[in-house]
Length: 208
Length: 287
Image (cartoon, rainbow over all chains, first blue to last red):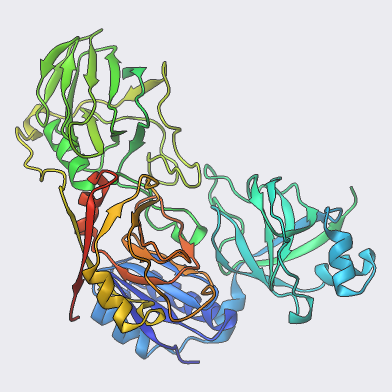
């Protein structure tokens, strides 16, 4: 693959545009490898998102822009991250509604959600909140019309093409399908975020 | 280890250093002092490393009791400084005897004051920084009355500066702006107007962003972008058209288009601009 437009962001940052999550994952993985190999020069932050990768705190902007124009990341590199298993009790308040949207029983909805291997496409919204891709496009669900004022930590939830797990209690508008006891975010731990970009994820159904 | 006791926390006083690096991909904001040159200057005055943690006050100052003798310096927003009620220097090293109270009064101009103490505020770092991040709640909570703040071992006397030249808070905030990455969401006429129109600092401004009020910047495209990475100084245009300049606690990703980016060098002045201050954007050209 080749990268899309490379946009200037102020004096010290570049934003790379890509067609979608797979290309973002490939470029992000490629950039992390280049960074580890010392080939990027000083770059403070690499921030993947839905269709972009931001490079911030870039010491030599023209050199990095030139490197990006010749970048040929391999898509396979994206699928080599560590695997995290998330034991989940599927008893979320919106499970019935999600199952209805999918036109299946709740048991089948759990089957559908535990089937794929997911990958953390990017983080945002809150520290350690990963946006996981991997669910087939036909299972996209809308956000709730009215967000909840408080969603408990560990809630496994769906919105649009993404699955997310709330790392800490917060307001939220995603559809809650289950919960996990796994501590996804602990700033005192290394790694602080279990669901960092590039990490592969499997959900396993647990009894309550 | 030394200690400072919080006698009066002021309206909003937080512990800040230069913030968290290399964690934006986890959704962690940078945080750190909004007026970074002022924190660096205060640290120089007491002989600290420039990135040592100090206190960032907001308009109303702070009062602290020294358990042991400490050397402090106050910079940023100009304000009266007293030690046990006696006038002391602003922008210079001040010795506070054991048991005495050092008080930073209400700012006479500007917004954010910085109090550095020799040895630095020695709370445990979180992800490599002692900064309070008010967006995600990482790091130490804002100061409350009765808090005890640990102070590190003072550095050698010889490293101290005597004076810290700092710009006065702005009567008019002039922010340079490099267009992009999403200037193409706005008509060329809207970009030109942004540079011509006058804005004012909104009272809703905070550590996340400097909100401005003025003529709405009209988009030529509807809807939201897919979330993308955000930088400090990014000027986001939300649906109401009122520009928001992202400051240290800004979210790492966002879905409103960024018309342009203000260089880091101009953000210290933005941190000191009071609500109502006139704001002008001037366009940077070229590469």
